[in-house]
Image (cartoon, rainbow, N blue to C red; front, side, top):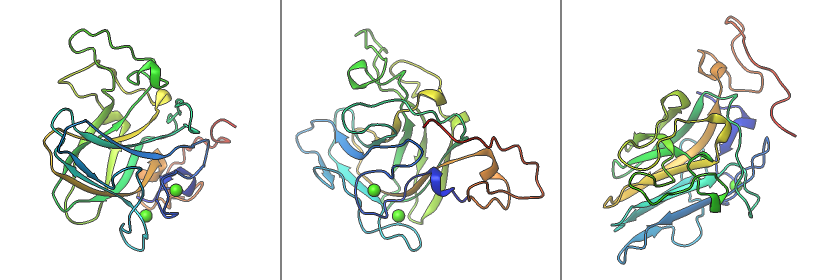
Length: 233
Ligand SMILES: [Ca+2]
Ligand SMILES: [Ca+2]
């Protein structure tokens, strides 16, 4: 599937940690993890893209780590965060997120799309952890992904995005309240991932022959595109 240029969240080709400022999106990638004494992650410190990616790509997001023994580690980005406050970003015109990925270690992770329902108030969301069992915040909806050694494109349809049912508050995914993307790695995992060309796809992008260009699509199929001025100005 090809992703329209304006719907590409990030292809990392500028080599920095900021996402392209397109259609109201502004934000950056960040790595995080628990405080386990012997934990390591690469890159350490501020997250930066590496020389990698499928095809002619110059850069992608390469992230590895081990030794996280408490709750694990992750790689994330915000859809609308100029640097001082996370805000929601409406994904209602899209059907899901597509990305390319590979791993040397057949890594399993959860691809999560946190919404304001699960992001704590202090971080710009509306979630409050009561302290009771299974009332933890940050349990965003998503799905498990298993990467292989070969580059391949993966999709996370919003219709299939669900919270982890084993812990925390349980919110069904609300596209209007999206705040970002997180790749979540469980405690105890020795992980390594390369991720690239993360984009938002529309129903039309799923049709055979869709070009992915602006207004793209096949001319022999029913065009039900919601051709608006796209988003908020
Ligand atoms: Ca960038
Ligand atoms: Ca790339």
